[in-house]
Length: 300
Image 1 (tube, rainbow, N blue to C red):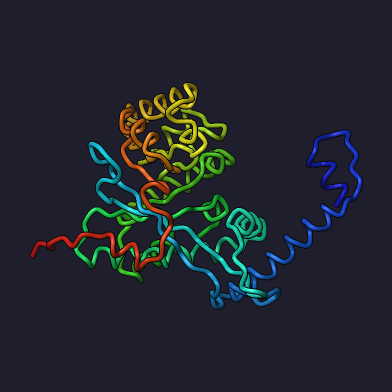
Image 2: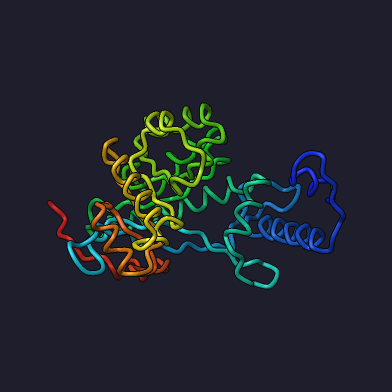
């Protein structure tokens, strides 16, 4: 463990084993074993298994009103939550998602998240709401997994959804990690009607040439930039530049992490298309999301 810590710190380094390293290893093992139990894929078993302990929360997304808080509800982001099976304690996604990616468990977990989000999207459509987009996060590990596109299409068919009901979100850094390989995977999914949003835009090492090739439909402005609005001039200039660039490329912008009316006013002034954050609504269960929907008459 000390050897790995030294390698992680850079070349020509040394590192002593510390209790903190042992704690991190035990924590990771605890999470991995819990994930395997919850996903029904205990060590050496494999297969589809039974998914327990996971739930989805949905954070609403709005097109901003001309003034004030809120606007037109146009979609929601599906966010996975997990209680560890040992003591039912909630585990932060920031802790369990990296472990799921490292172990490959993100593939069965991602399929479950996608299926559950599709069911909610179908129920929204059944209420007569048109144009609602369900945003689902897609890991780079899922994207590179052979058969990912076929599985997603099969799930869509089984759950009575269409690709147009879903927007797949993938982080900028994940896309650029294997740009050429991911580019082909994205094109295959786009050919089947899926639309993409580039998450955490501006925090990775992006290439504008590849950004154009990925042909995303949405760019999500990272919360770290929204936090600085409206007073931090650098944050304001970055957000303004991202919005202008996205619009020139024919993309829509989504700002996440909005917590104050001053941030919202600034984003509205800069021309942001879609807004999301605690000011507008915290992640909520499906029943609460449904309560936000206004019934719309369905054409004959």
